[in-house]
Amino acid sequence: MTRSVHVLGNVQLDVIASPVTRLPVPGGDDVIDHIAVRPAGAAGNVSLALAALQVPHRLFGAVGDDQAGRWVAAELHRAGLGDDLQVVAGQETGISIALEAPGRERAFLTAHGVLASYTQDDVPADATAADILLLTGYFSLPGLRGPGAIDLLERARTDGALTVFDTGWDPDNWGGGAVQEVLAILPSVDIFLPNEPEAQALTGEPDPETAAETLQRLSGGWVVVKLAERGLIARGPQGERLRLDAPPVVAKDTTGAGDSLAAGMLAELVEHDDMARALRTGVRVASTVIGRDSLARYPARDELLRGADQVTAPS
Image (cartoon, rainbow, N blue to C red; front, side):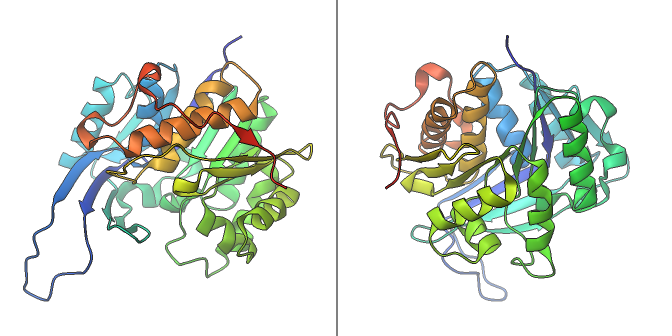
């Protein structure tokens, strides 16, 4: 039987600038190659990728009633995704500006807008009533941090859901108690999806395999560490140890790659319990997305890159 999927998290406006190798001097105006404006934050990215893969699901989040929010809402409705989106009167929409450049990790400037006051009381009661619940963009949801996130995940588990969690990068660079905050949430998580720097920050382990093993012991569920162009490693609750390489691709836009991986994984888990199969599809979706232009970003299943077909157990 097909499982139901709910995506809950930061819906916002994204601005992607590339290549940004320096900030302009005061009063200056640097010209770069590309600036793209698109919907819709980590949660929106996952949802749009799922829609392209023709996976029925519901998207929960909030935007303001400003121009940015109206445009994001219109784009999501155009994709058939806006029915559960809250448009909050008198509030600004969250906006992130991604600064990309070859040879270095992306950096972001973010204004939370309405997301700063979005709490568990604003989340509809039926948002957690699904077979699979993804909570994503955690650090872009200040009002849901800590106990709020635990409450939502435990509510979902009580209803029999598989819980999936993606934090994103802590804007305080993992100071101020963020590490212990996230580690306290992990026992409520069935699949945790940190990238390599996040896994390293949470554990203090420079080796991603050791970091994955540490996080798996703390969680008790699956931990999938995303390694960008190197694929991923995963550790499972029954001692599973997987490594998956990514197919080669010329990257055009890496922002949202992890969200696309999550969407590909969920697209398989709605029908199958096979994590190796789900992760193969996740890597193929992410690799396809980063090689496409922003205006035609999310692939259908028949457009996915070949490759990512071999899952190995690390020695």
